[in-house]
Length: 285
Ligand code: NAP
Image 1 (cartoon, rainbow, N blue to C red):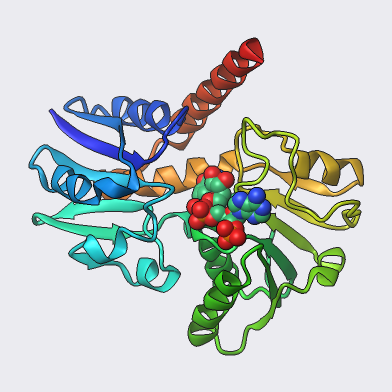
Image 2 (cartoon, rainbow, N blue to C red):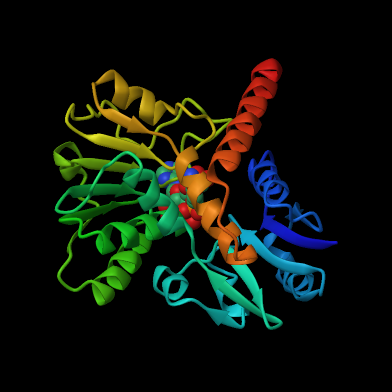
């Protein structure tokens, strides 16, 4: 048996195992399983040893390792280096190669809704791995201006510096909260609003979402975050994080297996797993 790991801490109720195992079954890849492997930050050495074991053929990496793992890998794709975060590891000729499929997943979630960010003024809340992937994807898709809004200013500055090197003509602003109301696309790439803290929003208190805006929350549990509920109430068009999760997972699957990802199967499995988590937590709550 070969294994694909999901590495992170804590892993809690992740829907990736259900989604990836359904894809493996649908493609008749019977001898590989996708399993959770919770690893706290102090266990980086054990994590790398687990990845190097012959039965491991790759992994997904999530919070808190997406950035810290970079220096422990043998190679990085250009994209992972530029974004500064890895969410997928592929074993190639015994080497651990880090890649990033979040940027693709993010853009694909817009594309399937026929949303083209070219020329748009975009605000991104957050400056971690997900925000970096979203900002990179938007810059590549010719967004007009990107406004980075984050609690820790130093992190936004660092991300803006990196984006500026790669995209010197991109309009960039940092912590300009007034620009939020004039944005065409507003993205939550913070972890605020994630279950179980479902009544929190990263938007400023009393913020009125512009009616014309498209509001995208990368959080997928719950599907309707407070951020999205408030935006919808003001008439904005809203997008939850599930579709991005499915497309980033599909791209990871293709990198590991070389086979085309069965998107429909993955969507069905991810949706069912998320519904089950929602039901379990509503019974507990
Ligand atoms: P991360 O690197 O740990 O970054 C977390 C971000 O959230 C930072 O900007 C942090 O601000 C901010 N934050 C955390 N708590 C906050 C609070 N109480 N108030 C204000 N800001 C706060 O995590 P990440 O990997 O970027 O992930 C961020 C979110 O995106 C998570 O919810 C994750 O599940 C989601 N995500 C979704 C997908 C998908 O496929 N749908 C993919 C990737 C990530 P500071 O810098 O100030 O700490």
